[in-house]
Length: 276
Image (cartoon, rainbow, N blue to C red; front, side, top):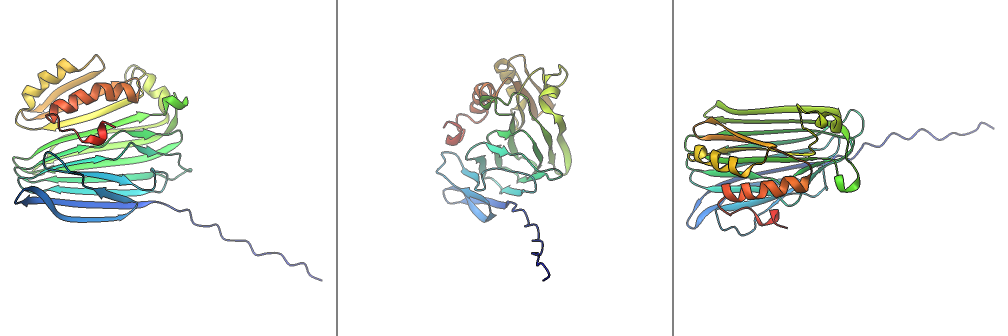
């Protein structure tokens, strides 16, 4: 009798998270209102009551980003409106399998006379992560923007003082098609070892990049310099374009230094989820 052997089972396709949110604002009788909204997959947006303009809180219902995941966010602040975008909690970049990268793309547009604040909470990199993040912001004449991207390298409370992985980040801000700010960096391998070098991080495990575009940018430069410690720097890219980088020993230390700065630049209108 011939022995029967089961046929090999096909390798099941790995489940990957996909999510997309697109929101556009316009002026209504009582201020900023939603003009259009689209959300799909593991990305959602909720709109809590705000005391200035409109606030959209982005949620990743999959719990984080791992290799092969893809999230796309797009927002347009219509003429004369005020739109704040933030996240419910820290985004997590989990361990990825070899050769797979999680991708997050954000596309922002700000019309004339409009203000857009991009204020996500920290992105937390886990050991073994592989993530690519891209943000573009297109400004029209008379548009204002505050663009903040904080990041933490490892879960220090869990003993992850030094992690390996790959992180690629790019921020491009333009006005009428002309470049204002282009901030690009990439780290791979032993991220802790790279950050320990004096020329890169000096032992830091958290960082934030901030861009502020408004007529009072020059005046804010001196104010922010008075609030920054020795691991931060701020300068003018143009008369109305301010850029800042801040390094910190931990996510807690970063937030402790960053919160007063954000409170100052937003006039005390930082989203409530940053306080929790």
